Amino acid sequence: MMSAGTVVRFDGLTKRFGPMTAVEDVSFEVRSGRIVGLLGRNGAGKTTTLRMLLGLTRPTAGHATLFGHAYSDLPDAARRIGVSIDGIGPLTAVTGRRDLRVWASQMGVPATRVEEVLDRVGLADSANKQIKNYSQGMRQRHALATALLADPELIVLDEPANGLDPDGIRWLRTFLRSLADEGRTILLSSHLLAEVEQTVDDVVILQQTLRYCGPLDELTEDGQVSLEARFFQLVDTPAREQAHA
Amino acid sequence: MRNLVKAEWLKIWNGRVWWILSGFALLMCAMACAGFLAEAKKQLPRGQTTPEVVTTTLVNVWFMVELVAALVAMIAVTREFGNGAINRSVLLSGGRRRLQVAKLIAATAAGAVFAAATGVLAAASPWVFLIGTGYRPAWTAETTWTLLGVMAVVVAGAVWGSALGLLIRNQVAAVVTMLLSTWLVSESLFRLVPAVGKFTVDEAMAAVYHDVKPELLSPPVALAVLAGWLALAAFAGGRQFLHRDLP
Image 1 (cartoon, rainbow over the protein chains, first blue to last red):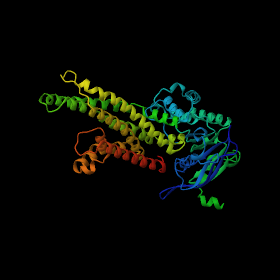
Image 2: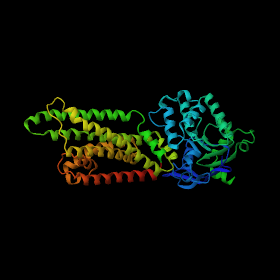
Image 3: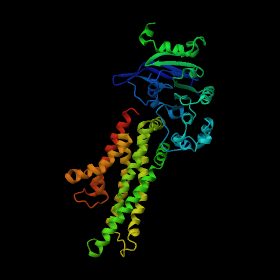
Image 4: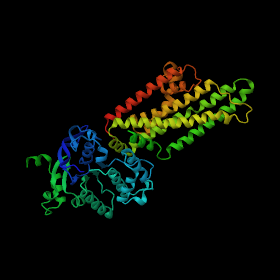
């Protein structure tokens, strides 16, 4: 059963690496059953924000919760949240099937589930190939399969469309929508604005600080303004000016 | 926890690294046995050595597997940091402390497998290598203690490698550190200042497998020193793993 209401909450999240501020005072919520696009330029702090959400990077200030808990305190977190984030690679020197079986074993998920997710992402026929021989698109599908292993309520994806060809992008869009239709919540980061515009319900725009958070329709005035135009308007305006606007 | 340990166990045996290193160890030990035996065959007729000493030394030679067990365990940990899979391991483990414990348990189990195989090969080697020499193996209590010592250091080596891997994270740096420590630092320190050098992890191991070097610690004290080193490495590796951001 999926949780109702707020699934993810960021509250004043800040991360500094020495003198460099990667993310500053970011607060927003992700509601249940929505596909939320976290948008920003390269280096805007998207991956850092997601890593802080998952407890992989320690925030300098603020906190982030999933289902009301920090990731480390969330009961059964591994089964409730599926993750595919830039920098989390598969195991070395293994086939796709073996990689998934190891992770399934870690979560106590039966091996039959491995076959299900392989089938679902369209890798069943390639699963005995070494992952190092996968194309970039196959790697993305494999990462999605890994995220889906435990049949999670919330799926966190970092740049899932990177490396996909046009067919793959179209497949991903349909795939994500089918996951959301099953009641799952999806938080995905991307810098592919045109793609995101066709996929997400809500948009969060980040450029070190939060620039926008809300429904896509409101941002684009029901499609009268393109997401791209609104995006550049928001990220090119200094945060201070927006605060005073 | 059982699932976690099982997954860590599977990760250790992924790929070809472990059997390439095992094959290398087998070759090195066989060459060392053959080399030692060539010398022993000259000394035995002259009474400069005895079948008892030859038998024990042929068993002792297998201590070299310790380095392989350490490298296999170390590489299993460091390659996860290299490819970023450590992030997923943490996410799915229910906490970094649990993951560290699971890694150490899996490394200990892998060490036990290496130790069991080493035990069989080491015990068989006097019979294998003395064939056709006109001499028979002479198994003594000292040979038994040597065999047990060799097996113990192989297990300890795997734990040592895993803990160092968590501490250093970078595969090249970790492997170089271990090889330098084994072949240069411990050996040099023992030769220059034996009173200090005998407390290094490698010389403590040498005492446990009854190496013939003078001035080594007694085996019980060496075991305690070795346990101290392992506890220190596990503590330092764990502290680093718990408090430092993942790559």
